[in-house]
Length: 173
Image (cartoon, rainbow, N blue to C red; front, side, top):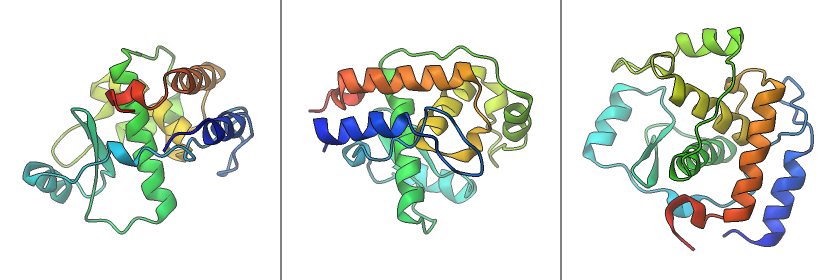
């Protein structure tokens, strides 16, 4: 559960450089926050989606996070996916629509990551920006090398999350 102690750790961690093959400046992992109460088991339709799209780690569905149950995740991978999707849910619930330029590296990466059912972040710029920021916060290197603007936005979202707490995601306490 979210406590002021682990929230302080989160903010302090966010100001340390993260080493995942590159330095990210102020933004590090937000994985010290327990988002587990936002997770639920996938329903039949979601299980079919994950079967058809094994490369998808998880997704936001309404006010919950669903993680692909067909993969054997290392604990840190599962936590990163849960954090990523929870941050995306937080942005949606708080009507946060990040505005920034996407780098060529990020564009190329996401252009080549179409699901088997045809979904593509490149086709939806708002979701692309959402996932880049969420992946930066979750410490996922697939976000690409973040720009200063992207780091600033991620840091502002962490600060808003600190202010609103987990209740800012789904009305839970």
